[in-house]
Picture 1 (tube, rainbow, N blue to C red):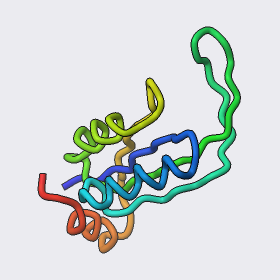
Picture 2 (cartoon, rainbow, N blue to C red):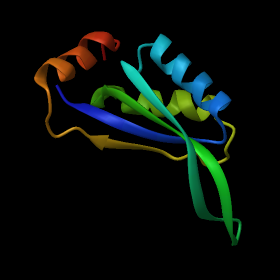
Picture 3 (tube, rainbow, N blue to C red):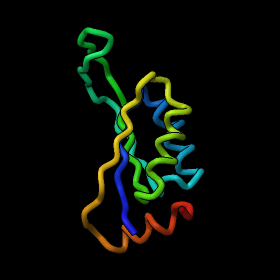
Length: 106
């Protein structure tokens, strides 16, 4: 079975905490890391925007990425939230097994 990191940007720590708590409680992710203080620059509606954001990195099974993405979109404040998955190519087998054990059956 494959595992993935899901990278999510949020407007602030409160939104990140809410999203993180819900996806962990629903067992869509075994764990999330929340990192505040990221500075972002991006194109939005024809101009460059600059804002502080908070990053959420969720650890999950690849088979749950779609369901996790839809759950985050439903509660996220952005019109087009950044929710992208990156496959985990290797690592501590015990940790990867833990991700599989702590997420819902898919």
